[in-house]
Image (tube, rainbow, N blue to C red; front, side, top):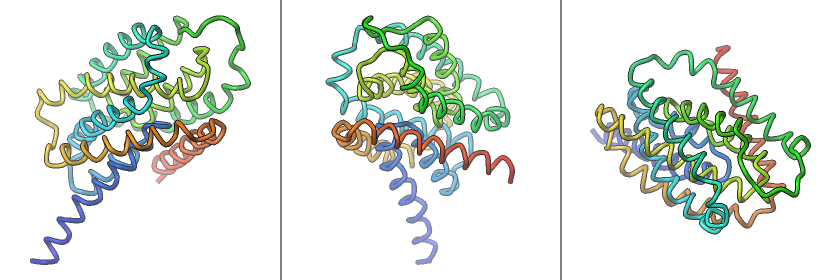
Length: 255
């Protein structure tokens, strides 16, 4: 009896620890779902329900991340409307697709998406145009953001790196500004996707509620910490996270 109780406790502790780490990870690079989603599977939550439950928890965690970058968001709020609209529309489509289609195809695409995003983000300082023009989003960036939001509503792991890769070409003054907008877009994507999941009753609230509270703390403290880290280090961390996630998911596909 005691052994069973201890195991049950571990099944709740692992997602809780993963939620804090994922919240902090999402605040700087994204990819936190690669920690929190497997933790829910470990705890015995079925895959589709785990995906929806993880979305609910990470949505709250992203509130902390966005709050942590409030100065940068305020400075660039004029850039938000077009990409927010694209994010909301794409997320709703992606969430509805999750409810009616299998995940197999998206799972096969994940490592390729991550590889592309990591390479683009890593090379962006070399290939992004230097211009005196004010920051802004090109039409192609809004279109790509819509596609990323569809992916985010469907599964979402690694979407932060994809968004950072796109935002690297927006003429924003620094990495913190890119990260701030990325966090706000992630907040909108996860929040909109949560609505169909709640209606379909596939969120496991036993895990979602405590993970949400812990991810909120992780997101806020992660954001406040990484705002003070030299940007070269933050950028290197993003590339390292993206490379690690790419390797893991290519390995899973081969296994």
